[in-house]
Image 1 (cartoon, rainbow, N blue to C red):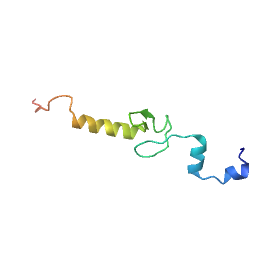
Image 2: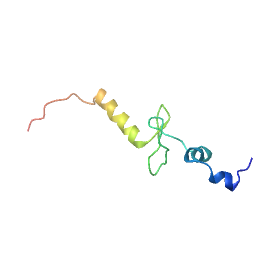
Image 3: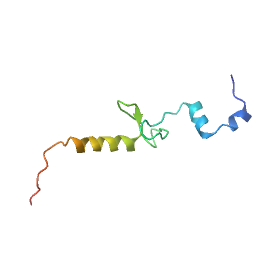
Image 4: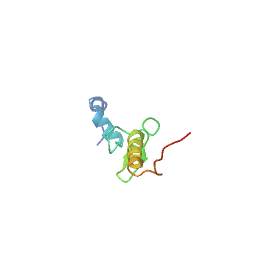
Length: 73
């Protein structure tokens, strides 16, 4: 069924995003736009760059790459 102009103008932001098929971040729910928010594919689905790097840094903190040592010098 076609959408009339009058009905289109009455749509709210959420309905417009659904109509356009916009994906949302699986962590925070922000609408994903590659050039603005980023769209990184993970095991959970697509997430924004902020959530991706937040989760990535938390994972590195839990499993450090090297043994922490005192820096001398």
